[in-house]
Image 1 (spheres, rainbow, N blue to C red):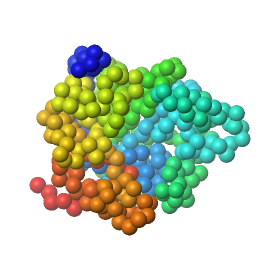
Image 2 (cartoon, one colour; image 1 turned 120 degrees about the vertical axis):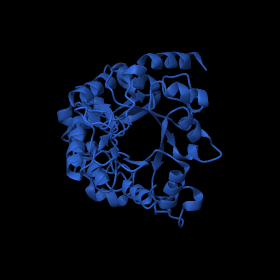
Image 3 (cartoon, one colour; image 1 turned 90 degrees about the vertical axis):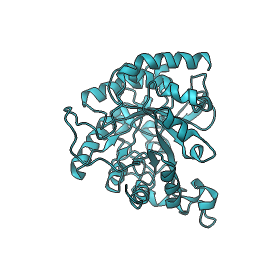
Length: 358
């Protein structure tokens, strides 16, 4: 294990006592048992809401996700100029908002280096929350999901607080706990520009009294999760894993993190790993190795279009047409994953609920 890996493991051990390990649905905010029905396993996590059916990270997307079966909803979090957390896939927002059609913001188009890569566009950290609220969301993949463009221009950018409030309203309306699953996006970058994500997120968790049944925090960067653990917020952590390279700002690679020793190191600070679905297909032993380390495993990211499916499950030659998504879910459920992260929570829930219980 590289020196950086050893340091992370040592820091994780120190932070372990601050990290909750209670399963979602175990206790209510007041510490009493939650008598609402527990979600069926495996969990269905609405990736940016129901991004297959509505523009991502919008109230419409999150609401549709829960209405059609999602147990958790995922807001990616970035910062505004005035250090407010908002739900956007990236801090560069030209592809997910109508900012380019706002002449008053034309002069803010710029190029920044984010995680070592030059990116040109408009960035959330150059806008106050009030300014971002004048923008409207648009479909990020209009060529793939033309059906979603009918919703362009109808939804505001949401703050993390608004996502929490929405999740609680949906929980009451559906008689079950809807958990929020925030991801810290580009946390090293935001720390470098004086807008660290972790303390603001921790403050929000404490202010809202979010318990282990209502919130799980994820990141690709172990250092971000260790900072969250150090804040002693008492919610489970999820270490996301990529398929190549390694987390930005760290010496270790995802391949090293996915070894049995790497997984044991993750288990000192996190309850979950999130692995690309392709990395869980046999002969890979990642799923079994993670379970042996005491980790739960969420597979990401499931989509219904042919281009995102295994070759044998594609139907026809149109890359944007739907293939046999149900079979892909069934394969992963049969392998024993604990959760699926999906753009189509309705399909995931239908496939799950069609399986025999017991």
